Image (cartoon, rainbow, N blue to C red):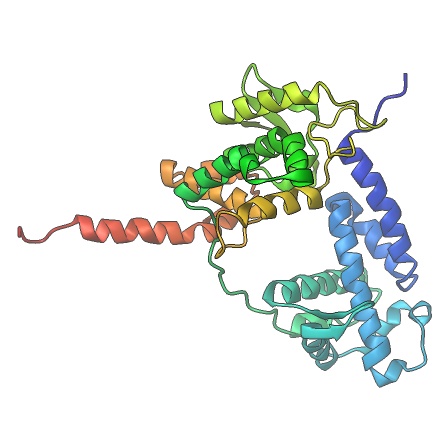
Amino acid sequence: MKKTATYQEQVNTENVLRLREILKTLPPFAKDYFRAIEPTTSTRTRISYAYDIRIFFNFLLTENPSFKGKSVTDFTVDVLDRLEALDIEEYQEYLKVYQGEEKVQTNGERGLKRKMSALRSFYAYYYKREMIKTNPTLLVDMPKLHDKEIIRLDTDETALLLDYIENCGSQLTGQKKLYYEKTKYRDLAIVTLLLGTGIRVSECVGLDVNDVDFKNNGIRVVRKGGSEMMVYFGEEVEKALKDYLEIRKGITPVAGHENALFYSTQRRRMGVQAVENMVKKYAREITSTKKITPHKLRSTYGTTLYRETGDIYLVADVLGHKDVNTTRKHYAALDDDRRRKAAKAVKLREA
């Protein structure tokens, strides 16, 4: 009997094939770099890097007079030695606004930093192997990131969101009502799971039905990088999952999707985009000032857990952060709240 590939294996296979297609649009020597980073990066990361490196070479072809009339396949590794720090600075400026394949693209601080990090990594590979003599990317300062406010649901908004998903059918008519009735228990299970465990949306859609363990109230998730971890849930998540699984029994999935925990209305494994659209659809009804996405539900969970425990290491572990400083950076504002309370708690004179 042929073993069915796991969701992660299917995604990796699709990504490998996609990366091969992207590499055809890069200089031939670039293949060496992507082969070298394969053991230490995910397929998704390599695809992101490939797109970023492609933007760099398109920049050289369209903006640098030295390469006028050239094509990307004309580039050899020595092209990297022909560039100076000024060229890299011009590229960084170009990244802020440039013409993409279909529309004008823009990058904020984080987009700039990621693309510059990709270029640094690319240069570093050939420099370390002495295939080039210079590395001008090290002479250019990386974009500075400013901390962004954490957007999350307040406690009352969390309750409102779950109540709305559970009861909004009475406000709907026609096809919208039929669709809602068909997806209500699934949607409630997904949102409750995201709020109750803090798992990533990619981890959520990757769940198989056999990953749910009601004996210990846990789910087995595949984290970034491929490591597996048990994440535990409470009674509310348990009930939402069990209610949905009763409905799931009546669904006959499309071949190849039998193991998926969450099905789309097409009886296939739900995708990341579908979950994101679903969360945004419901969230718009309970808050107009916050753009709530599955990642914001993850932030809501992390905030609640940190407030309840004060244990940043526990929050980092449950969220699957490899570096606790990543967690601390995201939840530093809560530490500030605690320090403010400490200041008010100390009275120097009795009133």
